[in-house]
Image (cartoon, rainbow, N blue to C red; front, top):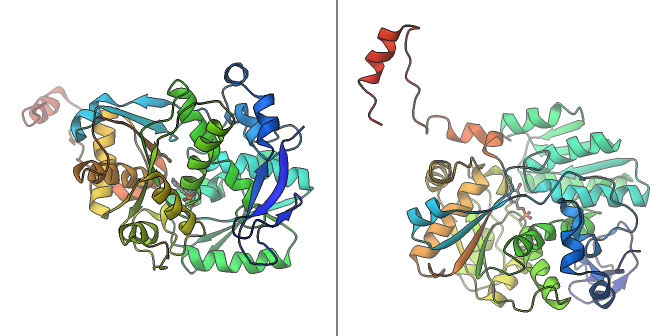
Length: 411
Ligand SMILES: *Cc1c(COP(=O)(O)O)cnc(C)c1O
C-alpha cells in the first residue's frame, strides 16, 4: 500500500531497497527515501486529507511506511496562529506562528520524526531503539518508545538542561550521559550503531525518520488554505528540518495539491553555533564545523549532517540566514510570550530573533506573508530564563501587605 520506490543516494543517485541503511556504499553520500509521485497523485486529494483525523498521519501517502501507523497517533496538526500582536511589534503585516510548542506528547516537533522512525523500526522488526540527542529527541524517544514497547538507549551530552534530562528519565530508558558535546555523542553513536543491531532513529533509520519533518510543512500549506507562504523561517541544528519543509512544499506542488510555489526559505541559528548560517552569509556551501557555545542547546550541532543541503535550499529559494546572540534569544522568548501568550524554548527565541533581523535587513519584505516555526515548549528550557524575568511581589498574607505592594505596581 506504500508509495515508496526505495532509497536513493543524494549524491550519485544510486538506488537501494528499503532497509535500515543510511549511507551509499559507493560514494558515502546520504540516502533519502524516494516515492512514486504518479501513484501518490492518483491516491490523494485535498478533500481526502481534510476528512482524516487531525494528526500527522493525515499525509501518510507521503510518509515511508508500509503498514498502519503504530506511533504518534496524537502528534501533529499543531496550530498555525495569525500573530497580529507580534506582527505589529516587529513591523510585519501577515505573520503566522507554526506552534509546535503544544499538542505533541513531548511538546516539541521531534515527536513528528519519532512517530515515523518508531513505526518504521517496528516494521523492520527491531526490539531496541536508540538515538543521539540534543535534548528533545531524548525526551520523545524515551516517551514514545515506552508506549510502543521498545528497549531504549538514549545518548546525550551530560551538560543538557536538567529539565530535559528529568523529562526523559521519568520514562526509564537507558540514559547514557556523555562527557562531551553533541558532535562527540554522535560520533560515538555511529560506532555503537555499527556494532549493535539497534534502530538508531537518527543514524541507521535517519532516511525514514527525517521524512517526518515534512508533516510540519504539509500542515503549514493546508492551514493557510492550501497555499504556500511567501517566506518561512526555520531553526537549524543538523539542517534536516529546513530541507524537509522545502521537500514537503515541492511534493505538494509536484502532486498537484497546490498550483504555485514561490516560498523563500530562511535559516535561523544561534551565533554560538551557526555553521550553516555562516556558510550562507559567506556565499559558500562549505560547512566549517564549530564548537558550540550557546544557550540554544537543542540547536547545538557543530558539524551539521544536512548543513550542505540546507544551504542549497536557501540558495535555490533565494532565502537567507541569520544568527543571533544569547541575549537576543532571551529577549525574543519574552517578546513572543508578551505579545502572543506563547512560551517557546530557546530554539523558538532563535527563530523569532532571526526573523526580526531578516526584516530589519530587508531580506524578508514586511508586506509579504511570513511563517515562523516555533519548534519547542519553553517549559523544557526554563533554566535559560533564570535571572532574566521580572520578579514576584513578595508579601505577607494580609490585605495591608498587599496594598502596600500595590503602591509600587504601575499596570
Ligand atoms: C531538533 C530541533 C530542531 C531542528 O533540528 P534539525 O536537526 O535541523 O532538523 C529545531 N528545533 C528544536 C526545538 C529541535 O529540538
